[in-house]
Amino acid sequence: MLLEVMNIRKTYGKVVAVEDVSFSIGRGEVFGLLGENGAGKTTTIKMLSTLATPDSGRILLNGRDIRKYRRETRKSIAVVSQDMNLGYELSVFEVLYIYALLRGIRNSKKLIDETIAKMGMTEKRNSKVGTLSGGQKRRVMAARAMLSGAELIFMDEPTIGLDPAVRREMWDIIRQMQADGRSILLTTHYTDEAEYLCGRVAIMEKGRIVSMDTPQSLIDCAGAFAVDINSRTLLFRDNDAADDYIAKESLTGHRVRRTKLDDVLVSSIGRAV
Amino acid sequence: MTEALMGTYAVFYREMLIFKYKLMRLGYVFYSVSTPILYLLAFGLGFGSRVQIPDYGAFLIQGIVCMSSMTNSFNMVSVSVGMGRLHSGEFQTVLTSPVKASAIMRGLVLSGVVRGLFASTMILLAGLFVFHVFPFTFVAFVALVLNTAFFSAAGVIIGVVIDDMENHAVLTNFIIMPMAFFSGTFYPVDFLPHWLQKLVWLLPLSHANKLIRAGELNAETLPSFILLLGLTAVCFTAGTFMLNRYNE
Image (cartoon, rainbow over all chains, first blue to last red; front, top):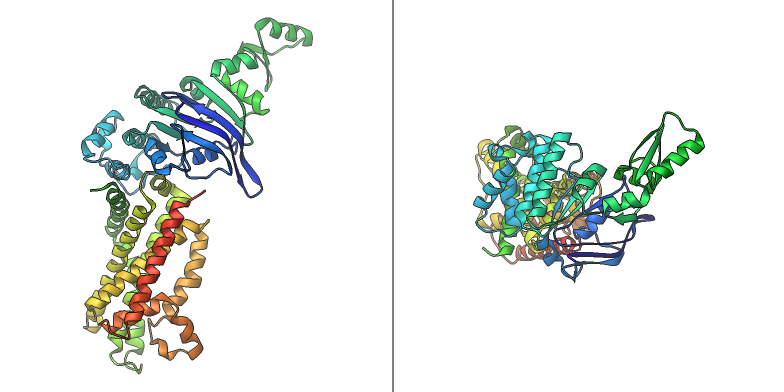
């Protein structure tokens, strides 16, 4: 395993932000953390990326405790944060050049230009970040992670606020990173994104992981068939069970369909996200 | 270049790029030096001939140069770190990179020194224009470097500890501004009541003012130099320690 997270806990005063969270990420895996705002996803990423120290529990990267091997950990990770943390006055090239210096990458100019080209941003190379669209800024952030050479990339809601077409472009970039052999921890609100990208997902609620498996296993476990009744959705293990329920309750105006990860998330945390 | 030097250069280069772009907006230059130049004109032209201080124009220029070096280096660094940490999240990008805390500290302090020296130069030029004097020596330059380094290092510490940018304004109003007014910027510390003088000599800006005006290192000014050097080292070490132990 590349990353092993064991029973981590983090509190802020009396507020328990993360409680007894454990999971692992393999090499080349895209692992998803799903949950509503305040579920503890960002705090988890902060602990994994060495920005926050857990109150208890252990985090191992390549078998080494990240608290003891901070610099080595930081060499192996990159963070694509929720904030557009690029520096609005700087150009795309400058942002990447400074990041390359921070990562200790020598003679980086050619590599930066290649990365910019890979992101389809060549014409924006010298544009100020402040003049870019939301999608372009996200691509620059992804370019930074790609440039880093990190084996584990934390992506905290990388598609939040993007329109559907640009979201799909980001999905392609994430897939490309995975194809390059990177492991990715992805937090997201979007279940379609998690379903498309993640090999496994963990659903978080109130700082805890309430379920964790492959998207399809989570769906099968919760019930592969969904019955929508007004704004409510009930999950059933198969079509017959759904039909029996409909007949028994004499339901009308309902809809039967295949369960989606969205339904699992709603049923796991007990309310719509 | 070693990795540590690359890290220092990355932090310094980023700050300098942002500084360059700000300088290209003339409003920024005006904003950063307008208040000290206003002090220079108001105190120099208003009190100049009435104050019992020989060559008050030169005295005032030296004091305001020292004050501007303090406010510019402190504000620029603390705002950059504070805003980058609390609002844009840019500082977290630096913290999660493999750069050593001491290298980050070096880059930030260097950038604060450059900004402080830039503001000082502007005041010196304004003083030359208004009072036709240029009261500056090599020792004054060394004192300015130390002063800006100390306040830049203090700026890093404040930028790391504040949890709201409003706290930054409070700190500036209650610590930096009183220091500017009581540490010998506009009049000698000797003019103050005896009990207050004792307090004022605890402030680093008083020693920077003393050094800048002395023009040479001698038995009287050497303690101020050593004190300023020591305080800078302490602040630098404390800032490095805090960056090392950074925990959100």
